[in-house]
Length: 560
Image 1 (cartoon, rainbow, N blue to C red):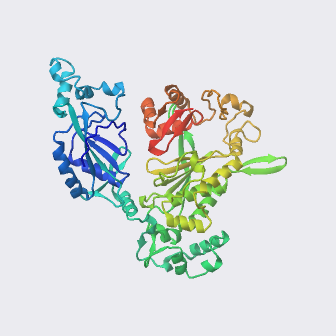
Image 2 (tube, helix red, strand yellow):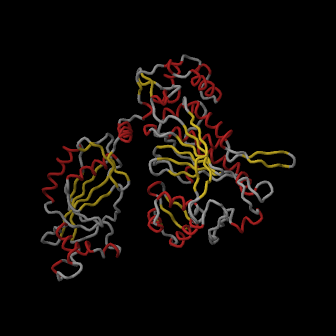
């Protein structure tokens, strides 16, 4: 357990590393959080900026901590003692940034300043006296300071601290409650939410129409034969692994019960159409309000087709053009693209939350939202449109969707979306997988957007706005083409939804950013004094100027 090696560890305080000045028993919760996440290391005797401050009695702590951790958490930790000469910095090493080293508390830690060096009338005397009173430095006679590292591995079972469960999320500690705790315990037990059995539901309670629809779809897709499906309902469901012992699973209820909402809250799809209704004040952001909506209920296996039909008959407005004397109609997107996005939401949704899938349709885009986390093993940027792993949150639902021919396997659904987008010249849908949900936004294809903005004759678009198509490059209505090595053109837009205020905010971001330097979302939030959600909307208009790097909470931004 002992190690007297002096090590320079250039590590940032992150999801797996934490520094604490002194030990407190409440840090057992942090160790519990490490065990329930990806593991991590807690350093005792090191301040937040990485300076070693020492420990009063490291030997006593080394003897007491293993038993305390084992008794309270039921796990074993790797605990080591380290030595550093003076106030060494194990975070930055010898290259400590000036804004870190110049802090009053760090000057005190390094012995550069103390109350004994100041007159009590000095403006620094009182804050320094407070620091000295609350934060002790423990240094040995030979000038060395000891600190302890407590390393925890990721445990395959759920670890609790005093009967409560904690998990490290980003740089914060989260106590698990409600559906999050339920999902976590299922995951650690090697089970998924959709595999949990539901008592008091019989095969005869399920929808005959839904089961027959599945039989017809799976035979048509050649993923099951007629002999395999022309069996009793119970045998079919057992072959699909829809039983857990003698009970039907949640997956069976969702897919085939006529009213799954009785057993699973939020087991339906909401569709709404939103349009521009105005803005409050000059330069304010435009307001889009709900105009009409529908709710699609019933067996999940039937909800998809009903939703697709509703979207294309009631919500999408096909725009008319003529090729000679032949009338043509252009929809925003193809059925294939919308179907894949909708099925992705259904199979990856966290049904324990009770929040329905939400489909928001606008004149130029469709946004599909589902609660649930995006797998860390699947990227959310352009790489998702390359070959990747298939990691559904609800594998039993996904298996039935595959057998019915609704979805692809091996993570090929987004490849299919990419192929259809290329065929109709539509931008690839953008994925936002932060804040506990997944939102996918797909904009209209090139022909549709051209008719929407300029109409058949290049002046009045289907949205009723007069524009001159010939002047598109001057007004900025089209995004300027960017060639390698070109300077980025100024931000221009003729889109009525982009206000002058937003343009000014975008320009401020570009002026703030330095070449080859990475920034996170909080840098821009502080710059503009805005909330994270609003800054994300502003950044969407800078895709020609800024590259996103990484995914979710680790995402950074870099100037092109």
